[in-house]
Image 1 (spheres, one colour):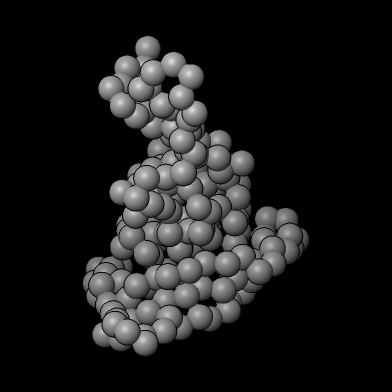
Image 2: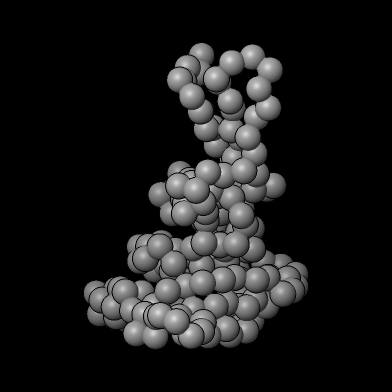
Length: 176
């Protein structure tokens, strides 16, 4: 049984539909439930651009609680990992042929880059199903060097085509 004094928030995660936030008003009978996130919760919106709360969106992937189900979900989770400085997730979801030889040096360089950059936006432009097990996604990402913060500072937006592979030899099958 769910008990709360004023507001209860439950997160329902469906990895295919990426639905996440349900709020329940517990302050009496007949009150209309709130559907907007409160100001404090807005700051916890997932950086991936889904509009959902981080705890019910990319966090379960970052914490290893769920397997990333699609190439797009991996792209969003990786962008969110860059924004939230999740170095382990970034390295762990990089395909073996794209990894750096010296992981310790790579980890240090990646962490330094993440500390000096703010990731501002992600927009999926196009997803193309290539020959199985590959999928390509064209996306636009916005980022801002922290040295350029302040009035008039603009985010840099770049477009990239990323190729993802589903490694079915792993259990469970895993996207990279």
